[in-house]
Image (cartoon, rainbow, N blue to C red; front, side):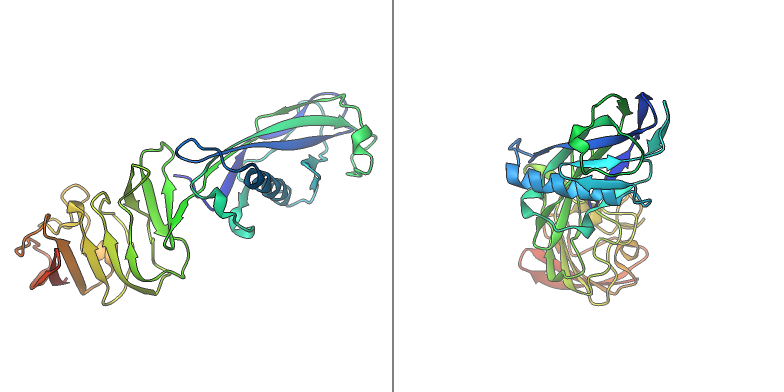
Length: 294
């Protein structure tokens, strides 16, 4: 699954022929489409393209890559068949302003690469438009990402294969009652990301819907947390929370004790945990309330 705060770059740029007295001009081509196939507004796409140009220039720590107009220029010490490698470089979106029109959009990014013949390697672009394009650039520079969907302070990220969403807090400002969506546009929300709410000290309760799978790692640790559960995958069994994952309540939610509300369609007042002690408190709406300790 991609890290949606980061645009990952990969590939190389270089010269196939022509002298080393050239610099390379990079222009990003961007397509942004929502899950239902609707294109993102052109002005929002243009804003993202500007962000991408700025981030691409900033990704190079040497300062030799610079944004000018609708391009980024790279003046490297190229000779024929040498290249600059973008492996390990990225653009961190947290450094830039976010446009709400981007949320939930899948972004396809390609790059038009041109080699511009110049009189020297210095990046003096005052008359760059007069340079003849005499050299040929080679490139497989690429980038990819999908923006999350934001809802009630939560960030839902579509998987790389487009079959499910994962969820975590957008930031540490999430407080009070957290209600996780069961699906988005017909695609199930199945995965709680590791440490999904760990920096959110103000959360009092978490509602886990039926599609969410029990994790093998920590989600959120806090004394007195109330957990509302509609997912059978979170039922306590003799081997932990589920037979399939083999995880446990304390793996996911700290040391306890826990106040757990199981929906009455998935549990009875008699649980079967061998490693936990519990007390059945009573029916609260559609939920069976338990106090559970390890």
